[in-house]
Length: 224
Image (cartoon, rainbow, N blue to C red):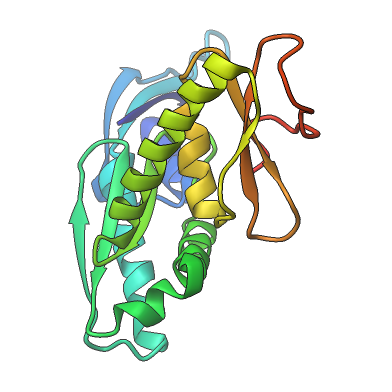
């Protein structure tokens, strides 16, 4: 849920302009008139109107994301695909059930990664939004993330003990992003991606000065 306080010539004009600028259907907002405004007398004492607008961004994004993904799958020939939605918080999971999951996942999950990328681009989420849409196929992503994050956390403890940099196996952007997020909260280590193209390795690096082993050139957790 997001809140906005907006000023304008009148409550009706404020609401209409807000919905148009944000490209939001009216059914996803509620509003309260803080100040109805006043025209004043001969322009003297004129006061602008003010609204407090409540935007249910999570529900709007849930429905919009499902429509976008369904349209992509239909155009790709996956008429048997069924999309279920999970989560009602900041993470919204769109899980695709189909008789041909291997095709949508692809080698090293590159097709699934591309499907995620296209969905994100078409959603055009505002950077200030804390809602994240996750595309999955038959629960593949959830299982793979759990396994890889568990392994990365174990290796992070090893790096903390030894001070030596550890490299994980090459993986897609989708998987690297999850590991960067998971290890960001682990004190004493940081992560950086190494390599070219979409398939890269994650290096887990000790934050201790003088740690053993040459550290890779770093770009921080933003480099995924």
